[in-house]
Image (cartoon, rainbow, N blue to C red; front, side):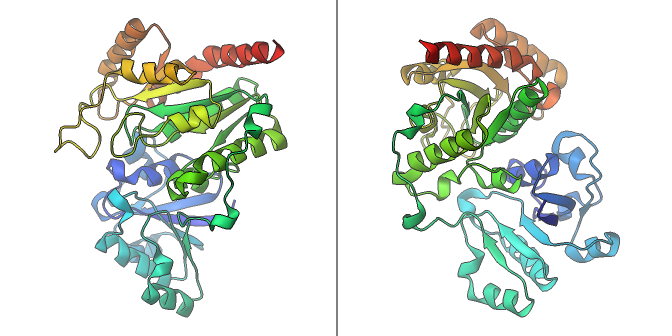
Length: 359
């Protein structure tokens, strides 16, 4: 573990924009999360806000009010929001400035880089601290092009992909990893976003901070490195964006370049339009189109997982039953029930991969 940390959420903790915060609140092997700064949710427990589970992570209005209550050394202040376009809102910048003055190392996963702001660099130097822009692209000299080496490894790979953005693909991928391990098999997750790294991922890369020419190669390198070091029974790829979202279509790379022959497809049964594009009325295509796309790329949808945020449990169960009947495949509710029910289909996939390699 790197050290203790607070999360800066800028009044967005109770929204989908705080998915980085939500991931860290649920679990992280990299940091000990002591508190969240969010004026709109001050006085509540961050776990209750995230998924109605008490985690004893208090939410405070400001850094100054947090300091009065938390009698612990704090090493890091983590930007816990993912805004549209990665822009830093004014209120968040004020919290970042306060955190720098306290001497906390600032960990920023937004596209707007703190280290590009001379006034913040100067302030950090004055308070003997650092600004970490973890989404800053690597130099081209450090990037890898796809080599085909992935075709020589025999570890089964699956990808958790989505019918929309901000559906909880990373959360489902971590749940799957943990369930597979609990079932007695070795399993690793390849992170592809900043939150996956923040949660302690050992293998991966930040997809949207990578030059397009090198996305396939960086993915291949992460998978091959994981295979060589650990040779797990299963590797799970954290998907990004959405299969057919015109603002950021993403998915074929995981299947074609990452050699994922199995897909867990995450879906929201009540979303009509793509997240953030409601004004343009960009409709999410039917699940069948996503299934057809996966199949056309040489892979198979093994199961569905449903994001039922703000949907009563009874109705979520109804959606689960309806989708199982319609698609004739397992359907899980990751947040409400976990994903242990998908272990049989994952074990079957691993066995099929072994049999195919043998032939």
